Figure (cartoon, rainbow, N blue to C red):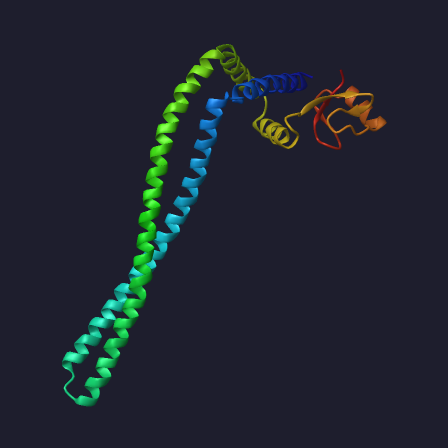
Length: 232
């Protein structure tokens, strides 16, 4: 049952660690305000970066279209200069005018896109400047906060070391499965059996399964929720 003992110890270690993490994440009002604003800045920056990337792609596309339109216009101008016959000259002029309109139709939205990109770049610069200032202030106050909770910080460090030591004693697949279950089961992976029921999902266990659990020499999972069970 050494395997089960390690799992139980790992569960207890993570329970204590979660308690400490919860206490250390309960920031005082001044820090909480800064933290909220920093997270808002990160979201805004991510959104504006995405918009800027999209705008730059459209600028590249429009720039290629404009380059082609300019070539077409230049060819039309050359054709006008090379035309001597009156009928052909009039047609060449109309073609050149059309190519100029096409170029202008591309240049206008391209200019608007470039203006939009410039505005997004300025907005991102402003957000980064604010983030840098607030982050420095947050780090300063957070350092003081952590110093005031030095015992918990040290406890967290020791628990993380113990967690790593326990996980090293288990097969990698078992560790992965443990953490996957922890994420899906509100952190409760290893639970006791009480009154013939799993205390994780409260499903009554079958008689043969309880007998199997009593005789098992390794970890046994609940048939309903897949948590690891043990008899108190």
